[in-house]
Length: 483
Image (cartoon, rainbow, N blue to C red):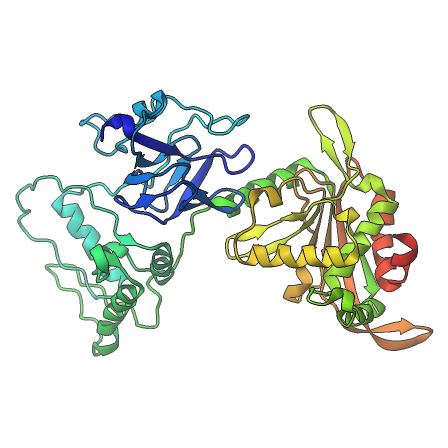
């Protein structure tokens, strides 16, 4: 086939206005046959992990970037040979080979950036790749080897030779060891350099067993070497440093790249903290009756198969409070200098996942019945735990609940999600001595904290909302009269 039959699939904007995504996993390899709609890779954006389907039939010719690479939106990531037909002009230019003088660049460079989705632009920056290790001269390599040997606990570094060796030809850049993302994470957690591990997997891929074997090999000399006092330093040469004790961890620090969801969360929280003037108010409330209602609803046939827990009634209480105080459900438009009051509630629920904290929201939560709200909450939580939350599910939130009580925490001062005016933190529910009907009795008690944007929510409005939530949770029958 000629270049005219090669189609270049570009990194799409899988969210709203995203500029880049990291390739987490390839599901195909060069030579594989693909069909229209087949998922070829999984990428992680600043909002979610998304699977990308290929939009045509053909045979994979090349994967332009390895797993773990962050790629700009609009950059070609995979080339597919299509049976017959001519490729578009921009794709034909994209498959032109790069100049021979620049072997470090990807083989395919887009001649011109084109928007990949209608209404979305593309980033102007180039694709970022992890820096390659530069070749060192022999003396520097020996010094580095000595330092690494000490860090790994192999004892003293070898002394440098009296006569330096003859200059050698520059070494070729080291190739990145082949390993799957979970294996790379295991190696990072254990402080193992994958370049030093002997691979036993197919096609030279490092496996989990290889990493554990490398750790065992590094620890073996420490466990079997006899203890001996260090020798006095000689007059003619510096004394060798003793090996680190086996009980010491050679990797005293671990560096975790900030990217994807964690990077986006960090930027959003910094922007929120230094843009919106936060005010937080607290209330401690007796939720004994709410806990009894939760147990009753679990036995109700209308809630069969649904997840019923205190968060369900807390969410409903907040929706009732918003209905009674609609100005709390608003946002601040800095450019127009306007307050935008929302006549709908997209209720965000903060969820801790292996990929970091995400806040998907239930669209039009205000219009849902209690069973419908329970079904939506259950679906939201299970989808988040599976790491399948879509970018659209995390857009357009108006107010948020964060349940820190699941970690045994009494309460906190939550930061607002950008574009929202209020967030409710729910603390742990636990038995406490409480004055009830004139007597001190053990009651189920929790502490609520409401943070709000003081530019558009004053103390009176914030206090009314928090008091209404507390009143419903103390007397849940008010759901009938207030809702």
